[in-house]
Image 1 (cartoon, helix red, strand yellow):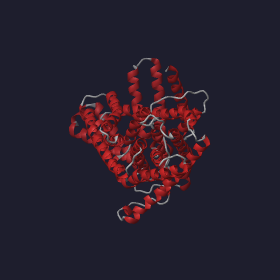
Image 2 (cartoon, one colour):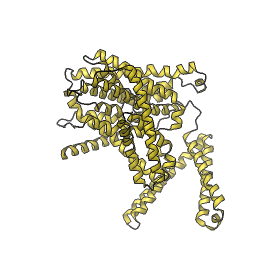
Image 3 (tube, rainbow, N blue to C red):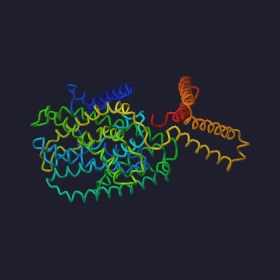
Image 4 (tube, rainbow, N blue to C red):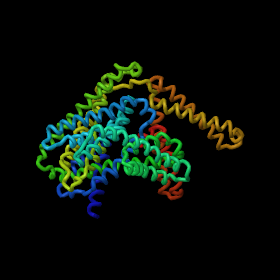
Length: 536
């Protein structure tokens, strides 16, 4: 036990170092994760890690889906629900169907049910991979929203396909009509269960005297409770987690009303999801030698060949679906034509951004080892190996080339959306106006008598004037934009010096660590006004 724990910690540390290297070279870290998984498998003498498949599914998938739902904007999701639905449901079923028939045709001994199982595993692209690759690039808001929304819902739809296919393999029977009916019942009731349970958590967070630590712990518990309760009633635990995450995300401003709670939750979830992503690839790295040794009548080269072929088909299928899904609705509906045309560039980026990731890998690893009669699950190792090859090809090839494609085609915003800095400045003005209005209406006398409140009022006025200047600079010359950037650069330098001074104060041991940490938090919050939360 001690040896296994030490091995896992050592490998995780090595993976973290690789991720730091990825950030250094500005390469999406999921690419390094899949390469690290491959590298771990090549280390001689590394023992395999025995983990129950159901445990992998239970531990990793609920929080991964909940986190994806949490960071999905409901308003944007609803605005682009048509293209999201076409990709998240239509493309998933299309991919699963084609992969099922192709794999059963080209792989000896592969049944149609196993083909659907493989299709359900590899059909959903990974939101983390796409977001990490596109981070810092000028990508239209519509494309980002569609990719995030697709990755959220298609995880749920593909996992339902996976569950039905798994049941068909285990029982040897499958009825299409019954499966369609069960699909809608399981999905619909899963949503009902998810919303019902999250209303309970909504009440706890909002009306009971929780602390930031309790709030963070409850949010970690929520996806597991949603999943377990829904599955207990034989409904879709995945849909319960997704619907619950969307609801809590939409109500977050009412539920979590203190900055300390939100910052604490951000730190907890960012760390947890990152470690889970890394841990899954460590597991596959430890199990790859065992998987390759257990390919049975297939050689490693044959398995690689099947994986490369399935990868190519998966990539092509996405393009075959994306372009008709983008233009056919515009030909059929005048209402859809009111939106600006995506042109050929938008669908190209969406088509090439179909990188598979941790959800597919965790799903493949969750395939049971034994059938209900005690015999080995057919072709389990081959399915897992093909899944890893698909993830490797899509992440490395598409992930590394996507930034170059975006720069090459000179992708530009196609919708009438205000710039990010303009929106932030507008929000800040609204908040400052509320503060001034409240101070004048409720505390007019204190503004005169209380020097601190008077100083606060003047500070708000100065900030509002500065914000208006920034808003004006959005539509002004490049010279004025350079002035704003220089102003922000100077502030960042000041914040860096302030952190060094706080470090010096800690060494002098004159002020308490608690007060110094509070001052550091304020500096962090000031910096966030410039960098935004996306840099956390």
